[in-house]
Length: 157
Ligand code: 4NP
Image (cartoon, rainbow, N blue to C red):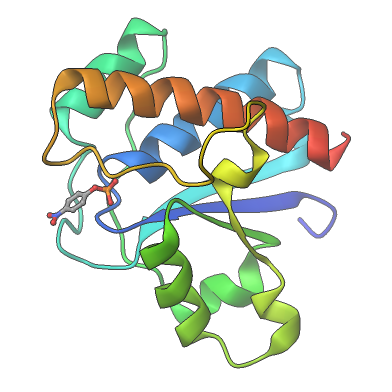
């Protein structure tokens, strides 16, 4: 659908942060009855966890907010750069990696750090919780929900 806003959330493994961001943004869009206006997906810069469901800790924390995550991990692919309008990365490593794969300046302009849309003045990254505790996963969930609010406001839809 040409008129839809196509949003791709990107992290490293596509089992923690970007599926959490996808779920949070989808949930927000649903609450606002804006589902028909969006295509929302997520992927990883690596294919380490190809085909896997999100990490059990990511799923548990999302489910506590009423969000069921059924995404299957996939690696970022070249066609994503044409397909999507917004490429929302989680940290500086993701940013560098994604930018390094893009040749055209107009496509580089589609890449944003998702946490640059947070509504407080904290750092503009979503930190990797993979080697952390459940508390770190809760923090990621809180942050991606806040960034979702900020991003939707930025879009002005
Ligand atoms: P994510 O977290 O990038 O937020 O999905 C990670 C998941 C897996 C690995 C690293 C980060 N890993 O090295 O397997």
